[in-house]
Length: 160
Image (tube, rainbow, N blue to C red; front, top):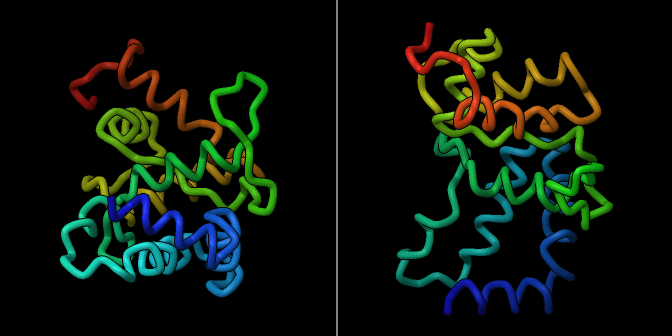
C-alpha cells in the first residue's frame, strides 16, 4: 500500500514520475546516479518503517539499480521494435544508464565492454561509458542484445 500512496502523492504534488525524474536530473546537472537517489528519497519520504527502501535501489550506495534503470529505459526510449514504450518525452535517451544483471554483465565482460568484476553502480557507469562510445545518443539500445546473448546466445558461459 505504501507504493500506491507514494505514487499518488507524487502525481498530485510533483506532477508525476516523469516530472519528478526530469527535475531531479536538472538539479543534478544531468547526473543519473544523483537523480535516481533524489527520486528515491522523494518516493520514500513517508516510509516511516524503512521496510520499503530495499525495493528502490540506491546507486549512491553503489547498487547497480537494475530495476530503476530498466524502468527508465522502458519509459524514455522509443524504439521501432516496441521493446521500450517511449512514453516520456522530457528525458533524453542519451542520459540513460544500461541495466546490468548477471547475463548482460557476463556478455559485456566477454566483449571487452566491462572490466569491473562486481555488478555494482561503478560497473554500470563503466559499461554505459563504453556503450556511449558506440552511440552517444542512445547507449542503452544495446541492453536488449547483451541480455539476449547472455540468456539465449552462443557466447560461452565460462567467461573466456
